[in-house]
Image (cartoon, rainbow, N blue to C red; front, side, top):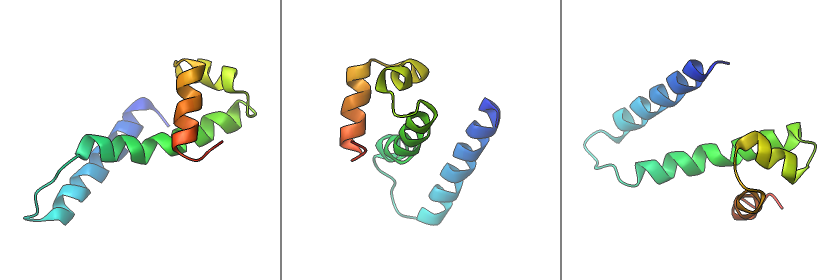
Length: 77
């Protein structure tokens, strides 16, 4: 899947979300999206890295300590 395909899926999902809201007011959309996609990203990358946090952090382009914190936040440790 290309970067553009991922963007298209996110865009379509957000459009559906706003359509489903109808007249209700949206709030905290950014946090909702980040929390929704962050856990599967971490799960897939950790699997690809065979559980190696240093390798996973490098793949993600983040610090290993940041990765560890995010893994803990999502109950993946």
